[in-house]
Image: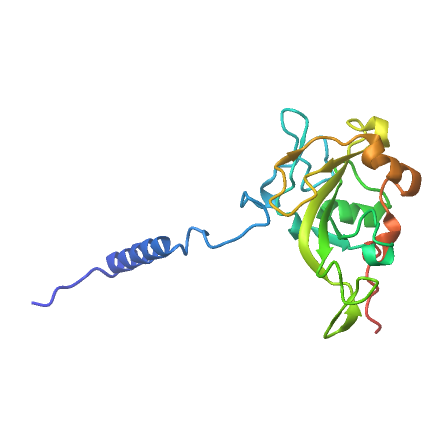
Length: 227
């Protein structure tokens, strides 16, 4: 006699087999995914901080008051990448790398709406060497299919500034942190830098401690297409 199977039982059994197969192959575990940081935790998983009510992805502090490295910062809003190469500064540029600068989505939207950075804003600057530091020409530039210029190479450091008027009252409300000036992986936490090391230059030359002029084209809303 041909056996008769219950249709519901077959559906459940098939689903269970499929799930077990995916799990064994890594399809349901997410092990194949990569992150910009050592810990594969997305910024969206960070809870809001009542100290920074306007910020979606707040800065995180450890028990010593050090800043925890922002997770997956390359997924945040990109503001710009100023470059002052050695080749154009007599081989003595203070900051010869590309400065790839990111900020949180909420901070970006708040600045567009009000012209001010809210408490908890982070300016995350990842340094990136030029592809050929010596270059083909005396000015350090090199050629590519698109033409002659300066092109990005390996990452070479991470700096973060945080707006917290109470915590950093002595430096115009911003604190500055360095997570190493070398190739990744960067430090997990960083201590506050002195005013002379970082904040002093921003106090003297920046708008609300941020060099707005370098990022203005992206901070300004994109014009609507012509009708």
